[in-house]
Length: 223
Image (cartoon, rainbow, N blue to C red; front, side, top):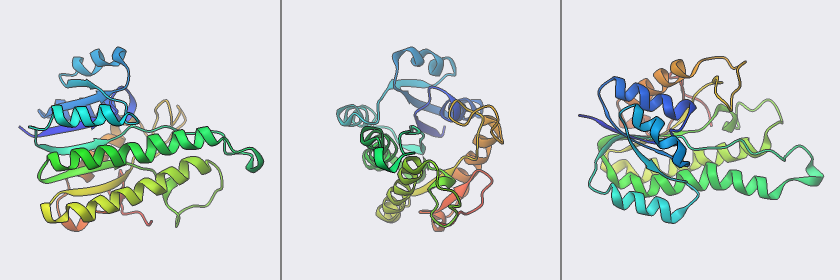
């Protein structure tokens, strides 16, 4: 039975990953930050764990607790949309640091500790965003968020290089503009459509794809 680990599964995209993998017969281990969300994960038939990716000790402890597992797929979904970047004269330093801690340092820490638990030919997918692409950037809004996603893309590329000899892939994923709490009700696609596409990207074989940057439709994105 294939096994997936979903980091950040209390709602939205992460929760839908759990639902779809379980529906296809996978064993799923999933995390959330709040105790109140554990039951929702368990109700889908997954094994729930509490985890805040900004808590180093908690990530270390969970990696040790799951050290005997071998994961075929790891999805790192935890992330926030930091505000406070609209006025260059009054940038919210705490908001920026919180965004970088959650969106960059968190995935860096999780991937670094759980990467060694991946099965051969396994895949680590980190939820990034097209807004992290320097080449595609046309606007000037959401500077904190864009910066954090550009930075996490570098994290993905670094781990892809580090894991190549073990045949473990790392890829950055753009889920599209999705109808979630973060994306809002006017977004382009529903969460089920996004996750189906992301799962297809994760399942596509070939080490040559490691270190890549893909949207939910399977298109390669420029850095």
